[in-house]
Amino acid sequence: MPKPLFAGNWKLHKTVSEALELAGAIKSELDGLSEADVLICPPFTALKPVADLLAGSSILLGAQDFFWEDSGAYTGEVSAPLLKDVGCSHVIIGHSERREYFKETDEMINLKLKAALAAGLTPILCVGESLEKREHHVTKEFLSKQLTEDLKGVDREAAEGMVIAYEPIWAIGTGKTATPEIAGETQAFIRTLLADRFDRDLAEGMRIIYGGSAKPDNARALLAHPDVNGFLVGGASLKADSFVEIVRFSLL
Ligand code: PGA
Image (cartoon, rainbow, N blue to C red; front, side, top):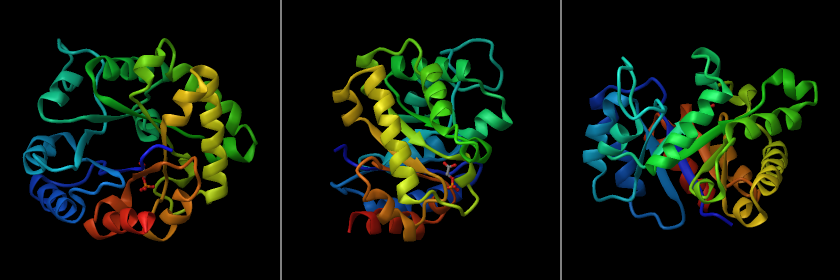
């Protein structure tokens, strides 16, 4: 089973000084942890100072998004080489907030995925259904289509480096967590899709993490499912105590 990954998605929160305070607290509690990998994803403006603070520690740094071209006349964008330059090893791609508010399509997400893999950044590809899709019992069809489109043209060797985050939209920021049964069953299904798309070995080794109101009091039960290999934590990653508790309680 893959080693768990605990990732904090700070979204649009934290000034540089707030980010340094939070990253410092996480580092002092979780640096050197051997049972899991710990990753934090601050906003762009805090990446470099946080990278300097984390230097030499085991805490990993990621960005929340990027643009697929390396450089050029793309006002406002940030590329994979620029993220690597400031010390990022990971990047979140296709978060439902990007898909919804910024109109990112599967085609755009596919371009980002391929660019991240080509640059040697580990992508965390987010997939997940809406409440409407779940209630209409079309979750599996939807996830299958989303993954097929997002993974178009990605070869096996490149795919080995990636992480999938299952984030049911109805659970994000709502306080409604998927039960361990729902998360586990859906993530097992995602694993079968990966086995079909690539092969069983790759599917079994790939980290599939859960996101959507993950908290200290539900993390342990979720992680107990063999198909839940960690978390992408939003709200509860904004305070060191709750993020650290998610990690500690899960690994008890
Ligand atoms: P949440 O966010 O933990 O606040 O639900 C998770 C995410 O959007 O990645």
